Image (cartoon, rainbow, N blue to C red; front, top):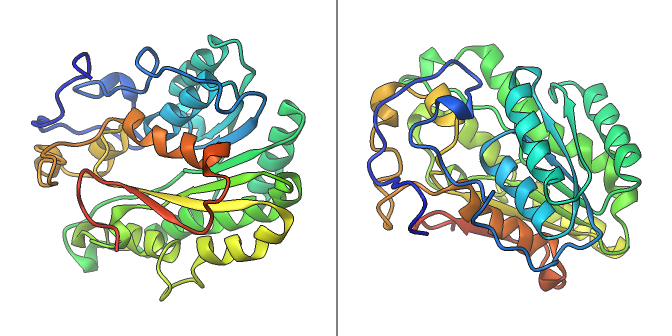
Length: 293
């Protein structure tokens, strides 16, 4: 923990969307050297969307260190970061592949699912982590196309991938969806993003996708859970927020700092592993102390 950058006082900064890890200051810990694997996912095959940087990158690396082969999906603009993630997976002696794709379209999800299964020889774990957000100070500033894009990326893609891959995840497979503390304590400048995350967790919206999928797929032996991260320091933050909002990001949580991506990856490893064999239909918060209820 002492080797990690201090995230208690993040300086003001901005990047062009979708952001780059190379330009992030300070650089967060993705587990390349800090994660110590214990073979908890030995022989598993996993698809992680949004796996180029941030939470997805840390999850892919942790999975590889735990013995899993990993496919990641990313936007074409994120190829450089995706290549680094794949290299980190392969450095652990595991199969690592990447797919450049825009998950807003149904057919892209169909092709990604088929490609991942083909590349890995099957699938045991699906991590739906890809997300889009863009902050605005006023409700009237939210463009209609942005609202559509946010829901297509964050909600529709999750459903389409589960629909395609559920048959491959029977008899012990695991699905983990990235939601957010925004579902419970939404920020006004992220109203559309917060709404999509609520759609994945709240009973009041979008038929409670995670819980309902857990009910639907439990009979075939597939567990479905979610992780709700709090303020995690990733390229998405300076690429989607104004510099003044980035400054001090995460300092308002009880632990007083933003989280490193690797600190969230632990939740995905647990939910994908046999240690969580009786855990399904739940949301695990990794929020620095903010409540997820």
